[in-house]
Image (cartoon, rainbow, N blue to C red; front, side, top):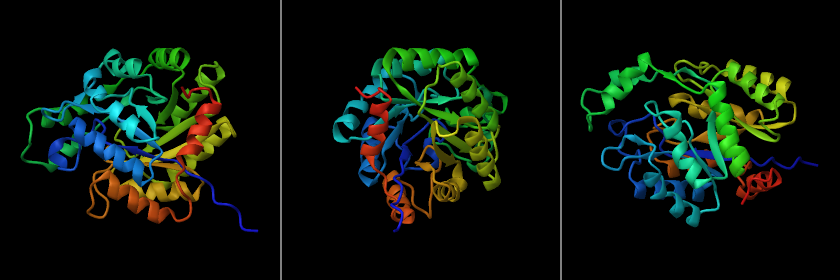
Length: 303
């Protein structure tokens, strides 16, 4: 008898805090565009919508709860996707700023970077000579002297404030193998509880490189540390997005796509087209929203 295909979870990271408006006209930064592209991604098959906010005047990343609340209710009303709000924010935000919107919105899920790290996106600035807005070039170039902060104390605080107090579950973002051991540390302390969700991230300058051998190594390390206690997904930056998504599928994992992580696929630059194309390449392994919701309810985080 043919084995029944596994269900997968597709995450769409709609806009993020890395790319700037000059890089693509498709990058959403108004509330209307973020909402419409998120809804379109859910209709195309995304089970999780990973969301950042931007200032609608110039597209700069924003921690403002007011900016988040201009699109969050619309997305929640129009889809049954799981809402996942960033706690990473962007490269110029304090931890307090990054937590402001999630603590008000109390979403089902939040992202959680599992360690402090060099986060270099400054090479992107050399690709452009003219900029739409004045903040963009310096925002990128200054990352050669930037460390993204998430100390052990920061992570514990986020786990307690959002997880214990509000029932939020987490997309544990692991940019290197050491971050998996940080997850294991908090698991041993009982601050992370199974089943939990690991997002393995490749190709950020300062994190693990986008070599497919590294994906195998990260997966083997996670299996050794966590056994059957975790679910896992993969994202890779830029042109590495689709090769890594394909390899993750072959290994039985879940995937994340979207304009936060890559702006183009075969000349197409919108979450709707990217998700439709990805679904065709995934064949019979469909994304099922109810499957993820069932897991979240079982973990007592669904309200």
